[in-house]
Length: 461
Image 1 (cartoon, rainbow, N blue to C red):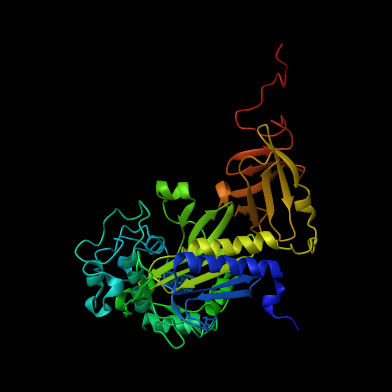
Image 2 (image 1 turned 180 degrees about the vertical axis):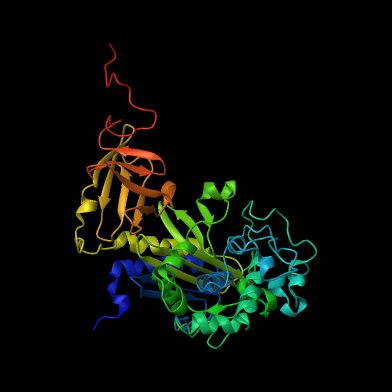
């Protein structure tokens, strides 16, 4: 009987091990542990350590820093899905008097609420949370440093506010709500706000000498929803599978797709670097591959969880050092190694369960002006409209049940596509947000906006 690890080819497993070995050695990390997930299952784990005769496994806890924010975002989306709040609501509606109440829930999730990056006072990651017992201590005298909604500005205090929001609406501590609503249903038994043996110690490695200094471990108090959690590669691998496919006991696949959709105005540098922030998740573009997830760090620890939906591969990387290896670069490389060495095998093509003549009538080639498009109907029940040249706007459309279809992405997201029929019932043209698509370029028999020159097509002479 084969184990999940044996599902990868020996050459792939060696390449993965080589990558983390280089990261641990060159990054001078006391230890580094990683896992790869494919098809919702852990298919590889690996570890490197400076301690002879010992290596951490998928059950050893590390602090995961800001990956905690993704867990907090899941709790907020659950509240939205239950109708307890709207993402467009201002924070003031639920937590009055913070001074940051004009920011909406969505803006706080996307780091576009205008809040500062850090708390006032001493470095919150290396000092006790008891120094900041109230939200006012987290926000200080200047709760907003930018106009709400205008720009992306990463904010740790913003997630402290979201944790307080969860507590207010649930009537229980953030930690308790997280365990009841996410950790227990997903069986993340080694994830929590405090370390439980076996766990790694956090270290600072001297930049100019191969010596180390232990980092303090503090309870972050009010800042816990921004970065408190400890977890393992085993638990985060399961969490990655959940973020990919959803779990109706926790959050639907549809809501998770919303979490993975860019939601913050991007800075110029971020645009150039292929980075965007969503609702508690990050998107990065690396060598033509879209990677979704989150990085994390606290003094003594580095962490990353990334998912490539197109490849159905995810990777987790954890290390116990303040700086050194780049966890995102390593995790992205692990995904690339598996995706390139063992490309995803597509599911068998299957036809639709039932053909609808009314839809078959209008699939095929259409023209927007003189640009040719193909309208296709696939087995998942959606139709896709894309330029035959491969250049231009494209989108998929979901049926609304009344003969119209709603765009799912891109320029046409949320726009309505509908076939317009002639008096005899035949399809005249397609209307897409006022754009008219015809069977022939500038079809004289269709209501082309601006009309069609009665002289028709002609040469240059």
